[in-house]
Image (cartoon, rainbow, N blue to C red; front, side):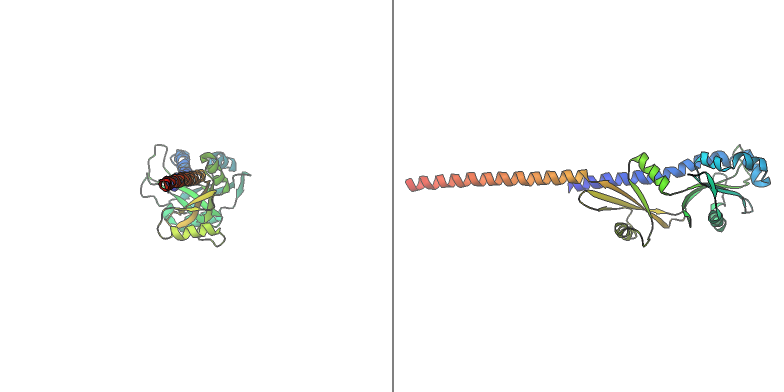
Length: 274
């Protein structure tokens, strides 16, 4: 059991690292967005929508350099002043209609209470889970009045997950929550997580084990299931140690039994001779 406890603790730490790594994507988006949202040129563009700003800063290559899939400028009247999305692999523009519609339908993403307000979370778009950060548009001094909202985001797709897996050295997978096509082990874990458990650990075989955690959307609702899979060197060593201990004790008991038997035979012989 002690080996199993050690294995569990190690796997929970790995799951925490994976979750933190996904959270770090929001931190990176926030840092990039801060430079753009508090900038006089952005402050003017969301009002006059001038071509110079668009041509100099809003091309597909600009998004690729920022390593984001989309940027959205929303005015104070809650209309989209500009939106552009790209495919990060081809650096070509892609349709962003579903992103724009979702933002317009959820005004809490763009309604900032004050100049320090930031909204971040995963949006459940038809095109895939979208990690978004939203900030108010301010002048270069970081002052208002607020001229609108700027949103940066990227899709939480296999490319992002693969990058995180390489950086953390943790094999990561994500699955849509409560999806009929998910593997049986993921469905079983989701049933346990639905009862309020923060994480689930489940052996897949004698050589592999998995840990699961729910990733919520912007509104705290289950959206994705995070899964990490690891080998079981600790469990394997525990089994080896246990087997070695059992075999050693068994051998010692056998030897002790033989010695005791021989001793009793000698004792009986002595009594008989007397």
